[in-house]
Image 1 (cartoon, rainbow, N blue to C red):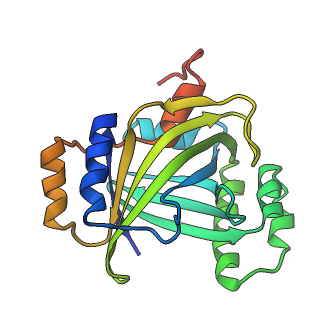
Image 2 (cartoon, rainbow, N blue to C red):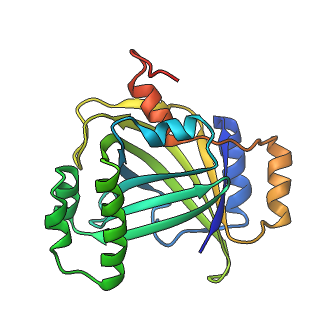
Length: 234
C-alpha cells in the first residue's frame, strides 16, 4: 500500500512543544514500551552514490536500500523504500543475523539458499536482485533515537515519530562504531506517515509552531557529514 510521508525539522523548543501537544492526542506505539528505541541502519548505494545524488538532485522517483534493526530487539530486515515525491512504498524481508553479515560481506547466494517464509523469500529476491544488478555496496552506518506515536484505526493508522541524536559512520556493522559523526546534535526530525488524510488538529500544530515541511534525508546528510573534509562534487 502506498502511503505519504511529511517531514519537519524542529529546534529543541519546537520539539518539546510538539511532544507536549501530541502526547495529549496520540498514543505510545506498542513497539516502544519505554517510549523510544534506537534504530540502526546500513545503507547500500552504487559505486557512484546514485541514491545520494538523486536525492541531492531532487528527483521525484528515487529509492533507498538498507539493512535495519532496532537495538536490543534481535530482529533484522533488508528493505527498500521507494519514493515518489511525498508518497512511498516499502518492500521488506525479515532476515536472520547471519544474513545481515552475509549481505555486508556480499555473500548473497548464501542468503538465498536459506529456507524462510515465501513472502520474505520473494521480497528478498527482489531486493538482492537490485543490489546485484546495480553493484551496490554498504555506504554508511546510521543510528538514531526514535520516539513513535500512533493515532487512528488499524485500517487507517497515522504514525508520527521524533528522530533525534542522529549519527553516522563509515564503520559498517552491528557493533558500536569506533568513529561516529553527529548529523543532528540538537532538535529533531518529526516524520508523519499516513495513507489518506491528516486530522484538523495536525494543522493546528503546524500553525502554532510555524512548522515548514522539509525534504531532510538522514542518508544524504550522513554522506555530506562523513565527507565534510573532502566534500563530494555536486
